Image 1: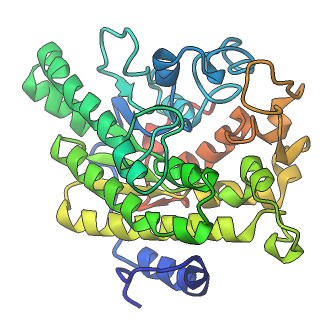
Image 2: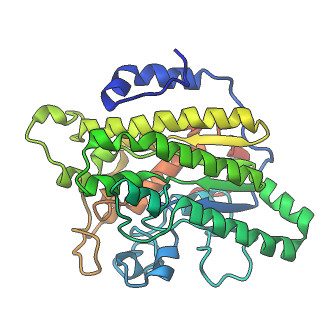
Length: 373
């Protein structure tokens, strides 16, 4: 089967998806990592990766005060969760400082900058509005974050010199997402059917591909591109789109089957796009990160991983400062109905950084790991 052949529907992907993924993973393996270790991290994305930008833009948003941050920081840091996020654990594994928000008052971003913003979309707001989809939180798109990155580069060159700046980017790890999830979430919240939302997938994936090419042109070499999570297991989706038909739920997890198939559709097409980009830029190490299969074992066997408090229900009853929350977030998979707990993010990163089975090609970062958060 041709791995570049488009997948036109969720149902079609269910029938052909395994063949698509096998074809993708049988492509020649590339050894990732132009350098042995990384000296900085630059990140793009939405609330899964935002370390404070949204709170700088809108300080009254829910993540800007407790109970957010209570587990690790014991104060809110603008992260959508009770503690550290995936990007924080990656930084700790690599022995790097936590990546500061790019909009913060940081005089030196030589060890990295985070451009991710909660609510960010892959498509710009005008493109979404033309499709009948409003931007619920802000006007921040992937394109806006790229503009911020471009504007930061002259400051890096000024502080370290052009050659040093090039070396900095060569030795940096760029985390490109997860992004695109909000494009779909906002459409679903507007009442657009899941079948129609499928039409967004090629557009979103193409937008990610174009932005990825731009980052490579600007000097990025080592790039992680995560896929989407199994959204059919997210409490917000489960509560918004309940079904009276038991067959709509996966008996092994309780997750909504069609919504998980939709996430797999996005992930399959994203991997096809990454393969195209690899052929155009063979010098770049473009590494797909399988967030979907990083978390699915938890949903199938939660107690095996210590999640005895809740799997398909969140620790907190909503995204607001007055929300009542559970006493032990580490026993819950989900924090506030949309985002995960620190314990879940820790488990995901262990799979990504240590096992190597969740990245394609293999991240090959074992020689860089200096910690075990």
